[in-house]
Length: 260
Image (tube, rainbow, N blue to C red; front, side):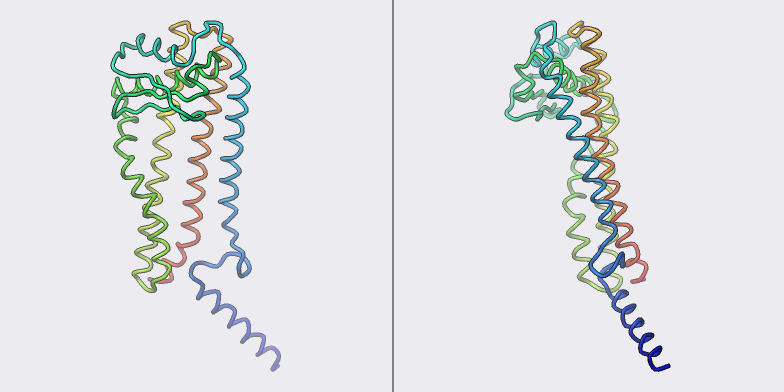
């Protein structure tokens, strides 16, 4: 009988220690089973990145029949679209290509600017797709542009708010943690807004490459594979962010309820 009482007391003490942990208890003591979300997200991103690098490297060795470089293809597509105020320039790096709507510059990286491969032409055309979106006032692009500062604030404040919330006790803790989760949600929302923008830019790129005759039908299939692989990196990034948000809700949602 006394032994059972001691066991009950021990169990009760352990339960109290669990309840007094900084956040919800998942696993045995130091083990946090929600890390599986982080691992899954990281694996998804690694697979997508590896797929993109592999696909780009493969078709980087396939020379386009037109012999046009990425820069030449970009200039041709922009002229065909009636865009004459966008400057095509060379920047350092590998696949650091981007279009800046603020100063209307289309920057092509080392692996794209002077390359005549179908992969390079496809990437250049994709960035032209963003320039065309900007010229035509594509709504999702405008929404994403307006959301950039909000997303930056959210990503910068999310974890500091959560960490400070863990230090406090009571209702202030709950408020800070919930605010941190909301801030992180803004960064996740930005990733979701980015998806239709990127997919549409690739769609416009394929249309322009076909319309201008820069690439033949067989080359278009190869280029589509490159752009699809690139799009998957954005999908993977969004999925990873969603998993991290789910982990935050699981970890700290219980604490918010306990503090109320």
